[in-house]
Structures are given as structure tokens and as C-alpha cells.
Length: 87
Image 1 (tube, rainbow, N blue to C red):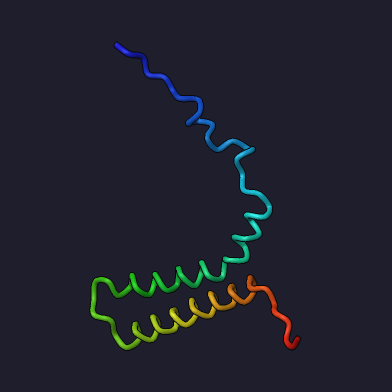
Image 2 (cartoon, rainbow, N blue to C red):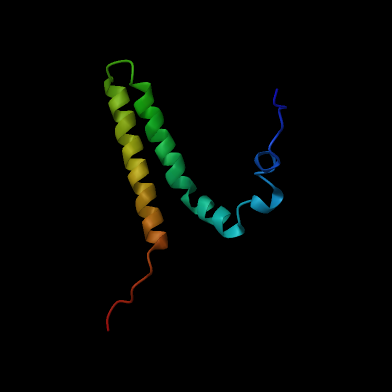
């Protein structure tokens, strides 16, 4: 009979030194509006999975799509370097 032993590495896989860095947390914070907009869009889609979408459902999906697109554009504008006008 083989004894059951725990694997120490698996137990301590999430040690204190394995936490996200400040830069990673800042990146997540900057992307949070996009993440939340995508969650709203998925929620709108999930609502209509088991039924035919009503006009209100279709408006909710369109609104969620616009919100997700606007959040992505905003994030792209924040991360894009500003180019100078004129030469």
C-alpha cells in the first residue's frame, strides 16, 4: 500500500512572493472599464440564451456593445503615444 503524501510545492504555489507586481495591478486597474463593459455585454447575451430576444433585450445588447467599444477606444487612446502635429 502506498502512503498518501501532500506535495509541498502544490500547497505553497501561491506564496507571498508570487503576488502581482504594482505595475501589473496598475495595468489591471487601467483595463477595468473594458472588463466591466465586457461583463455587461456577456450578461446581456446570457439573458437571451434560452428565449427569443425582445426589443428591450436587443436594445440592452446594443447599449452594451456600444459601451464595450467605447471602453476599448478609451483604453487604446490612453495607451497610444501622442504624436505631434506639424513638423
